[in-house]
Image 1 (cartoon, one colour):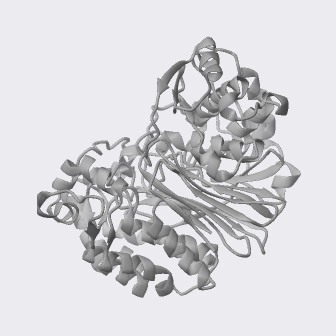
Image 2 (spheres, rainbow, N blue to C red):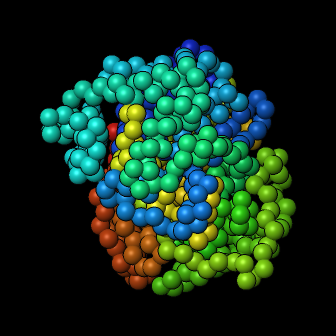
Length: 544
């Protein structure tokens, strides 16, 4: 089964599974297809990450293909900003093509040409424009207007594409054909790379042809924790799996089974416990995030059950702001026996106090605000959870060879700025296991809404026992670091009253594409697969 943010992309992945491909083949095919049919959210010019469960090998791994800074010393500056209009300075070196092909080469089973065939077909022959794509084109029309080629493609004759129109992308088809034939060099070297660098530099950016040639995918050990009797595997820094793990561990300690209530939306204690768990975990993410290649990050400590046992004391404390904790002692401790078997993200070396930076503003708030997530489970129960993005809608607005460059360059802060770095991201591609059996593959789009959406989906499935489709349709909440809580309609009056009594300010939020776009697959103990696509987006689950 495949769950993705567009039906044609989910069908592309399912096509690989029917041909005997594995979960990685299907994930890569789905991702390339999303690069065609969901260009405002993601694409060849973006970046992302995937958490993989390889069941026969009993091995988990995370593949980091986030967009990266180049070699120019100017990357030591922070926050290149200006993502509202076309801005080459906002574009970082794209990692999508390298990451997808790396996964296919190391863990896939089908030929590259076979896996890219659905995406190439969709670009060459066209597809029907969805309501979501039409909305994003309309809302970004001034950014598109800044590039005559992009404007002609997405607003032919000056009229933005509408639902039901057919979008054909010959330039993108040519790029995909080159990748299918030549592999990564077809994108990172030669004519495509030359035009990409020239376009970025002509619009104020820094990417050189050498930067493209030198881009490298990073394989990392996953974050590991325990929740509701399951092993949780998620993405390490600069990604935010530790935030998901910490929030879940705090929630489990703050809300015992007898306090869960019939549903999350009807339980004041559970809703309040969830709100504080998310606030606490976010405070720790703000304090301890960073690029572990250059800054020690105690992610294992943040995700540990021992740290959650300490931090749970803040639940119900009524604080306007939550102070970060100190996870270094827990970081140095050995992982649980269940996690040790998966060789999780290692302990970091604690730096001197003078070397520890203070909190930055939430520099990653825009990176991944318009993103795509996909989940895959194959017949052998291998699994892939993958999130990737071009950043804000249509990324930097720089359009070349049929794709848009990302806006990741706008999100480097003091913890990540510098040559050849990755910036922080809230992406949290996650897998839950029961022993070696997959039980849930989940992740989300939506920038700062990603960890809350992933946490609530896991709580609904693993603590409340809900079908994953019901879990995605349930109302969500998302707290700020202060006392504001955005809440979708559907929470009970008792929950609203409890929130008010606890001092929270409720902000009504209608579910939309930014309030977390979750795509997930549940594997029941009887072997049945249940796939669901977030109703806040235009996706679908496809399987057989």
